[in-house]
Length: 413
Length: 67
Image 1 (cartoon, each protein chain N blue to C red):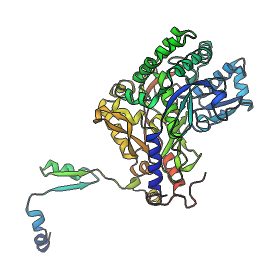
Image 2: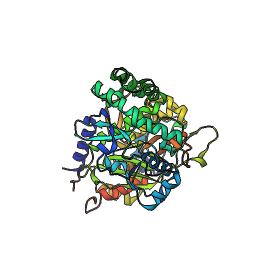
Image 3: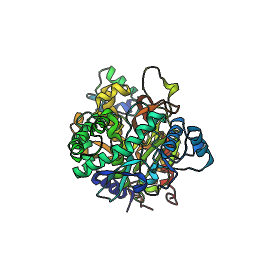
């Protein structure tokens, strides 16, 4: 097999991979290798002493939620002592937005790729305001975490099983026609998911149905975690093809940006996390912003988010720019991808498929970096989202990957 | 241009001038400004002209056998 054939196989697996939302489960029961006192986080691996503010805050909140610590001070002491094991979500078939913290007692969405046989996992999106993913850990956050994981998750799981699962790829495809791009705008997909589940939430006759439905509809980002798990399930199916130069993950831990490539095994290629250029909520500015953070760039890796920006002209009110910028951004991404998505299509481009299959070689050759459409977190734990905008993946990651792929000895594992 | 060169270029420049430019847009803008039809091709050397990166790219073409 040559590199061209390896890449065609990777693209074929991305196109044909399915993403069926089959239920919810407790992370310790389904996430592979998730042992007690283990904390999974967004992006490439990072130790406690190099974690950014929002991620440290989320670790504190998760430690309180798990009962590993009784106070924030105890949680910090615990983390500093080395008693917690930290690892990348991506090493465990999981993804998480912003800080991306997953611990054993948290409920996770279970998305199955029936083509590859693999599954992927993501926690429930907490909504807006003070949320764990932004590093908040006060009493209101802990109460919501407990309710989400102990009461909401069983309701949603019962509804999903009653519904026979939900085809997430089809739902995203429909949402692109409703002005979503699948990363920073999920208004359409969140509505579609609620529409699909509401009769089953009611029919399952379990728990506080009113609060469950109100919570699901509270924030447009409710669907984001589902979309991320779907993208992860599909892209993991295309990972591990010897010689392939296709990117299978882009992720940020708030300190570093990292990519993984199908043909280079488990290795990460990293560079400093970039700043996000965008619009800030009143009272905040660039000096308040944390560098780019979260696993949500898995959506761009799968042909959504910044790559599908032309489908979401309304997003420019949120991230800055013009509808023309949205179109131009998607058109640029065709320069660095191997194909056009057969399921995700853009009405404004005569239903052309979104650009998909990022090729490391094309990124280096053209000098065009993948564009990511994302939120901006405050650099201090617990403040929350302070804006949204666009950023680009660091070129250094792709140069490192090219060096590995071109190594005479072949890419090191 | 010498007379000999002018005779050789005669058929080329004798009729309407049609121009295709590559890379830098300045010449295309100049042609357009004086009313000469021009097609500009957006092109830049691979990897921004970095010879090390170009050499790396030459090792991983579609035809390169997988390791």
